[in-house]
Image 1 (cartoon, rainbow, N blue to C red):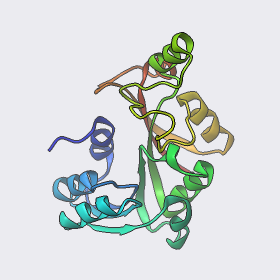
Image 2: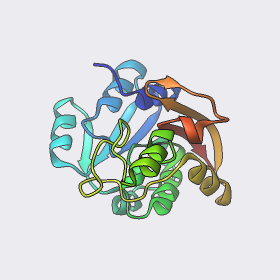
Image 3: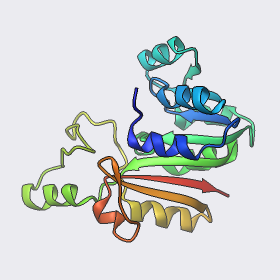
Image 4: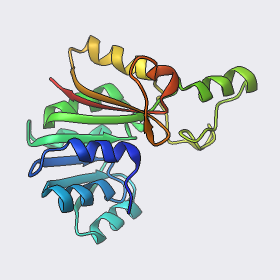
Length: 195
């Protein structure tokens, strides 16, 4: 099974033998990859019960929980990495969730869809309606995304909060795109953060 492009980037950059908390782990595909390929001790939190069941069926340690409330239950620095892939924009308080990630993990990977991608901009400009694109495939009234953000929004947020960016990757489809024009050209972003 092939990982989604942002998950592949994360998997490639997690150190072997690390302790990882995957928040919003879905069916556990990334956790299974990290366990099998890198000997990682991976734990997960997922809000969707059917995804929790699928992850457990893979032999993974996953609990049903909510990133907005349940990260507070973990001790400080209990993981080498906390991962939040394609979930930040679905949380009620992304700023607090990000703080919690960096509290429980020495480092945090965060990936999200870029709402400033040129297709999104074109859809709003020419169609006048909330976009439905490859990276944002669900109509406005049923999307789990409640906090759309752009790469530049995220960069400003981490800069204001003195969060260190240790690495960043920008994807257009499955391919990496340059950092200089990422806010316009990238559909998804992946950041590696630390305090």
